[in-house]
Length: 199
Image 1 (cartoon, one colour):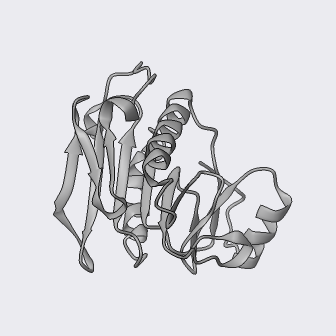
Image 2 (cartoon, one colour):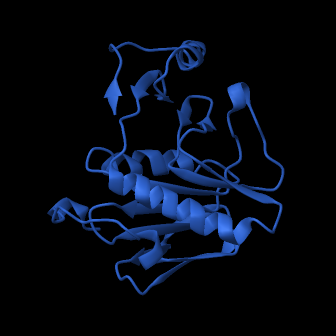
């Protein structure tokens, strides 16, 4: 992500920019960041996840998936565009069609955002009371981290790591099972992982 000129912006200024720009922006405590274009692998994974989830929730009627063009409010000073997310139950919609109550969030990691997605963004997502699952997917190798809420808290032992094609990611809160091989369908791995990819 790239930043606008360095100064603090109000939430009102952020929403005005969003209304008048063709570029999507995220807002974090006064800072505004333009969203970078996604790679082919990123798009493939996003599409695969959306298709897999939709096929399993379409008959339930109480859950709906969204992808990167729909904004989520984390708190009054944090607005983001998750790669894919699911809302269950009645949708709580805030200002400018912003979703307030995601149930499950999927983020597809890139070299420029993976540290932030794993730490800073996740720390903020944890504060959304409706969020039950946070799933991070690498796009340069098979590596998925699935964090699950344990009651009112997020505990490290409730994190599952998937690194094999034959594994199944189970998201109990939305009654979905996602095959790792299907999540990575048509994805081409071109770069070797660097040391800082490891948990």
